[in-house]
Amino acid sequence: MSIEIVVPTLGESVSEATVAQWLKQVGDSVGRDEALVELETDKVTLEVNATEAGILSEIMVPAGDTVEVGAILGVIGEGGGATAATPKNAEAAVKSEAPAAAPTAAAGNGSDPEIMPAAAKLIAENDLDPRAISGTGKDGRITKGDVISFLESATSPGAQPVPQPAAALDSAVIEVPAFQRPESAERPQKEREERVRMTKLRKTIATRLKQAQNTAAMLTTFNEIDMGALMALRAQYKEGFEKKHGIKLGFMSFFVKAAVAALKELPAVNAEIDGDDLVYKNHYDIGVAVSTPNGLVVPVLRDCDRLGFAEVEAGIAELGRRARDGQLSMADLTGGTFTITNGGVFGSLLSTPILNPPQSGILGMHKIQNRAVAIGDKVEVRPMMYVALSYDHRIIDGREAVTFLVRVKEMVEDPQRLLLDV
Image (cartoon, rainbow, N blue to C red):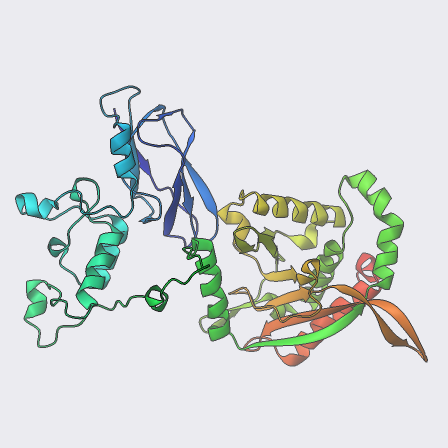
């Protein structure tokens, strides 16, 4: 009996993924729960495992193609059965840009060809007749690449008009498909250059950052913090803290707790805009930006108002480790109410962080640097850190933004305030 390999539910608001790579090839034996293929969404990379043991008999979606939830990726046949393909067939099955290898079903028997989910979506968006598109997939299936190639040929100079369904030809105006070759594709390749396809994660980062700029009335306010008292406190207790809790005492836990205290005082900074409504949140789920080899991700530490310093430090360390190892789940990356990013670990002295939609505020930490500052009537050299709060001016007024940053400054410069809640 054959078992279909299906794209699983990918998480809240995620409907499609890209096939990153096949971990098994056609003809390989697979065990139950063994990883078969990696899917890359706009948030995480996840593995699809075999539900039963057998032989990988067919790969229906090659690496690089986009698939939707519920799409069939391939087939597992019974172990050693006749359904297993030869290595030669396996090699052909995973080529993503092979020439037209099989005639479409329409050409063979006049029926509609089988269309892959991502291709069907593109066909519907551009009002195309699928019978006019040659399928290069398995058994003549139409893939997303086939539709893109068809649209490119239709919009190139001297191309024949795009075949339209009969109903469309009755109209006085025939719309040209809304597709243009990306400008970057026209750019000639130069020496000592390498062209690499953007990952799903990188494209999503770009889209969300641009969305934040286009949607929010984003503004940034700055302040500076004397880190002397906190550094002295950390030096005094770091050994005992690590010995008792098994985790190092860092600066991030103090900034998380200070941010939570300031958010309680200024709830607009912890809120978001939803249509014509303002949603005020009485929970404090803090996103902590983490740099990974694949790009920046923001895992969320839940209920920070209920956590102690050791729990915050341990939680951040665990999320950072899982982010770098590619082990974050969808739940780890959604639902944050406020974000903290620390450019200081890379040496940044000052920056203007970009909002993480739909959140309304993000706190930027920076490098600690000795600077001459006025202390009373004297000039002293102190360890100073610039901090920045970027905020959505549609919901947060300047007074609230400045007050928030001042509260963080006061609590970090006098850490006892965090313990006494004053």
